[in-house]
Length: 89
Image 1 (spheres, helix red, strand yellow):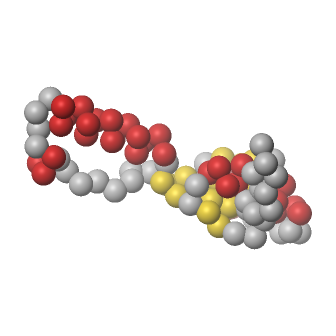
Image 2 (tube, rainbow, N blue to C red):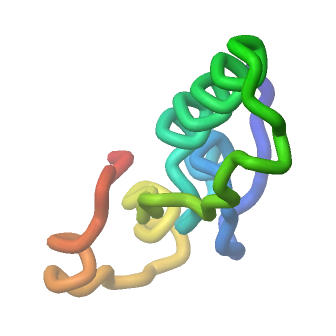
């Protein structure tokens, strides 16, 4: 894996935080993939695409990289850590 220097930003995707980003907040990819698969299944079974409901993401994820926070000399409050979906150490 390449080494990146993303230590001062907020991202919408988890993969940036996994390689050094500080924090990400964005839609959960798995639930969106399941919804897209369901839509494709319904279309292949004969439903018209125009009849399918338009839905936004059902869940958002908050992920914090504590190693990056430490490198930036940031103290992450325990209340924020308690709300995170994933902490990368």
